[in-house]
Image 1 (cartoon, rainbow, N blue to C red):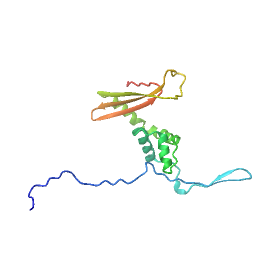
Image 2: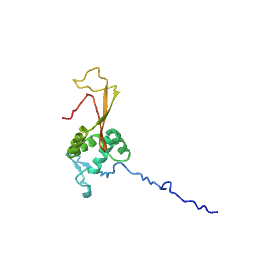
Image 3: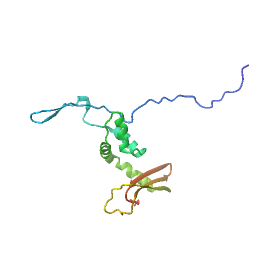
Image 4: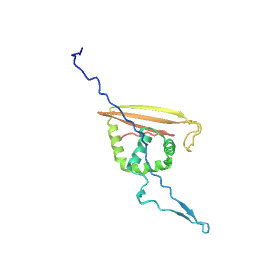
Amino acid sequence: MICRGLLLMLHRAGEIELPAVRQLAATVYELEKLRCNLCGNVYTAEAPADAGEKKSDESAAAMIALLRYGSGVPWNRTEGLEANLGIPLPAATQCEIMVQTAPPLQPALEELKRQAAQAEVVHNDDTSMRVLSLDRDADISPERTGVFTSGLVWIVPGRRIGSASTSTRSIFWKPS
């Protein structure tokens, strides 16, 4: 017996394919180095022509920024993860890439600050963390035993703007 009822779609059936991809992809060129046993000079082979002049591109800078500032992954953890995948990416190199990438983004940051200053509501969270060994600047009180993380979320019409900062001293900024 065939049912004559109306068929209604509950939800679309689908499949998700999750290919394994690296956070950052890299080509490592291992160049031979030879040292003269007479004069001690070291000679390094030339890199292939397809190696290019730049060591990283904008997509690598974007991924490093997203990992560090978007997801809170420390540079040393990214360094270890990439090392396990065969990619040498020291924390210092990540920092240098961010320093080189930041200046063109400064106008966007200033615009976010301007929009945040117009917010009707601001949420904040100050969280302390005890540090067993803390390198202290001369102007930091010896009674200070930790660092503070401040998170701010500004609610503006149509969006939320978030900010987080961690430091060993309190820094406040007030929109002018």
